[in-house]
Amino acid sequence: MEGVIDSVTRDLLTRSPGFDWTVTEFVRVVDARLPPRVFHKHCPELTQARVATPSGVPVHLQLLGSDTRALATNARQALALGAISIDLNFGCPAKIVNRHDGGASLLRHPERVFAAVKAVSDAIDGEIPVTAKIRLGFADRRQALHCALAAQSAGARQLVVHGRTREEGYRPPAHWDWIGKIRHRLDIPVVANGDIWTLEDYWRARSLSGCKDVMLGRGALADPWLAPRIRHWLTTGERLAPTTWEMQADVLHQYATIQRRTLPPKIVVSLVKQWLAQMRQRGGEAEVRFQKLKRITDLDTLLDALLLPRSNQEHEQRVVKEPTTEQPHHSERAFC
Image 1 (tube, rainbow, N blue to C red):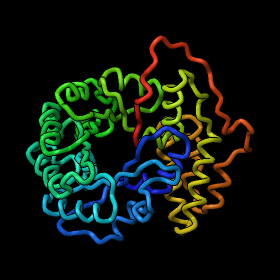
Image 2 (image 1 turned 180 degrees about the horizontal axis):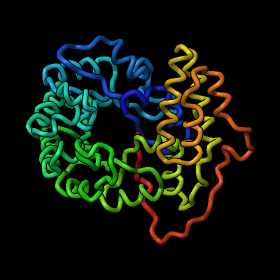
Image 3 (image 1 turned 90 degrees about the vertical axis):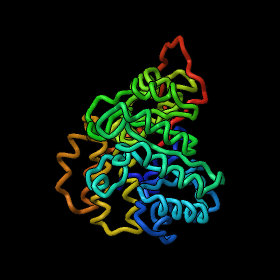
């Protein structure tokens, strides 16, 4: 989620109850200890008394790298700056990241996953949790279990598994059943991730993987009310009304309003379009709007074009009763 989950996005996505915690964009670790300003740029919540979004949802810091000594050094730096958890990224499929020996590239060699997690776990020495995110291997799913076991053996307290290999990228489908194969063999909690766009996807992912918890990424950007929708259904058995374009546009407008306080208008235009591009992945009005607005370069013109006349029903929590014979436990969680 590099470039799309900054502190403002985290704030907006957690204003309605839904997420239990969030994760920063990755801090790229190469071969040296990074200065505090780099950590504060990725996680400004570190400067607060509580490392959390304004609504109180905890924020965990993510590191990406392969140099074990540098990872350990920067984990200690993060701890000193107040980090409440260190998450290690072995899931990023980006070619430029993989070419520089980061992210999913380590999944080709489970022993390297072990070494990275062990270095950070030893450096932290139990003061805060160390977690990890992987994919179903680099090109061969059969490596996924070995990588998962390596992370667990090295001290990871929780593992998020994206249900595709690096070579599969984001091509559907996500193999939630393969996540279940990993969950059966691990003693630590396993969290399912990948292709969870709707309430129905959430339940299928849980059913096929057997995981109690899921992580939301692109799905939460496409529908900022997905996590609250899941939480509401788990709590009440009722289905919230579908997210409207007016609701999506309002989130984008709020995002731009906050970002323009510190960023040049041209940068804000790019950021708004970037989020809108995530929303368009599910088609509908967001796709139509994206095609019409993608060439606009003036921020105010873009925001005017986004907003439709407001409706009093825009933010109502309308519900539709959904008969169900099986109610999930209230402890199920979603993460961003």
